[in-house]
Image (cartoon, rainbow, N blue to C red; front, side, top):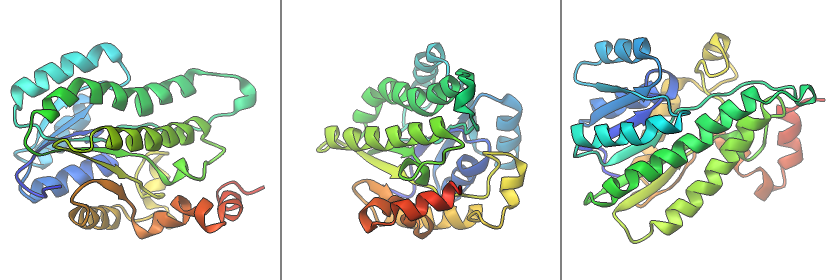
Length: 248
């Protein structure tokens, strides 16, 4: 994808990977709009990055998405890149048979990107050059049993992205899948942001942006630290990797 001169929407852009991507793309000469459900977080991010724009969106609410897409494309007619970064990750005890966390995770991580893609795709297809980027996870390929629905939604996003890329071949829209490893963010709480076992956030962003420059026509964006998970089945290391993530 073009690295500069784009108008980029990043969902979940107020913190973590989303914010770091937003700041990196803005520094590269792109117009960036961050979206999220917490106005205070959006305001703080925009204040720290003059020239960045924000828009309120609860991606888990189906009724919000078409309204959001209509307003966004009217305000930013040059929109040509969408990064589906918003997501939640919650531990679940399946024996408790509770569904609230599972349903919230599916609505945010899976239905949200599918609905927003449907709402924005006609606009993107009308652009001379456009890109859609989903964010899956290394856990799409080797699940963490503690977060079963998160892992399942990321596996579904991987599958959906493959189909989306195939169906959009020959159009102006390139389709990428970012596959993060365990990264120093607060996705699972504040301790994760300083966990020495996690990949430093800026290191992940720098490697990701470099890889995007090398993939002009879409594809999977795999930093080195995620390849052991992504390729576990192909290399015959699945059982070993599963035992590392899910110790007995």
